Image (cartoon, rainbow, N blue to C red; front, side, top):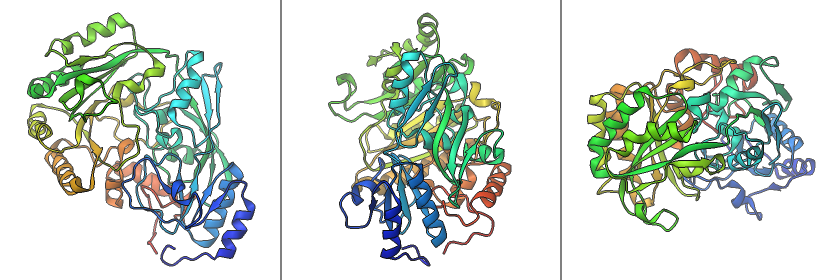
Length: 469
């Protein structure tokens, strides 16, 4: 149990009798499996019990049960965004809630909290529509929106959180609210960017966009030319249309069969391209990058939007992932000079891949209904992450810390909210992810909707006066 809390077997049995889905206790079949997420960075967690929700009523019952006993509620669908252990908490697993309803006339989708992006992409495609999904198809749709959501269509349309139309949410006292720009507007603002601090979303309605294809893929360039490639990519990003989204990741690719043979085991600069326009215009825009050096592999071509995950080729296998991120105000020559030696370390040592994503465009503009996504004047994101074996943990963590320190003169605040990780779970890290005004407004929302901090097994925004038990 959490310090200062307790719950009896009798109480848990009473909760189990209320539920349609199973209630799993430590030592019972399925308990271990339901606590595991995609990122296995946390040690094996030991929640007091796991509610495998079979519908909204199960979520309401679980939250009411925990709230009345002072127990924290943890929420998990895919487990990509685990941040702190759920030991002693009541874990609500929503992975079985997988309803998706497409409304092609309204260009909208209604989505339940266990749905992953791959499902929505496939469901929307027959109508010539696409969501503002992330680069990885296995990420949960709901949690993605809570952190803002930056994906291949970001410069075209903005953050995913900008196009949430409404959602249904179970508050800390177990009430089900419909939340929209007109209903509970303070909560509508806070939830979109405030992470999982205000309740459990049971369904969300998002906007879809008339995108059925992209000019996209990757240029894989020899990493030994990074001193030429990185400033050229930076210069190239300075005058792009909003329809062009790109990033560059430099790493030694693993020598595994799922990767194309030319890139296996090689140290490469992977320039990712997602152009929301014609093939002809896209090819002309990409031409300067193709002329930098001879690519090892060039996959940039016309693609159906259903193949969008092929652009970044993010990992799809659960593992222990160590990740750090930040925002970069500008990528001037001095910033590049600081980055190059760190990047080059990856040629001969076990180092996380280093990625820069170009922002701007619609990402830099306020949406029709403002939200808590901060720092829209950011030019780039910087990310360093990789699956890590136990013998490399200390070395990788020291490298990531050194990277953040070296880039301090160009950083805006702390971690980039969409990528914030378990290594950035302290109150100081989360506060630094926001500007002061936004953070104080989020605290006010926490005071109003979760004053007892029931939802604290997360990147937590403590309510005023909160002291951990």
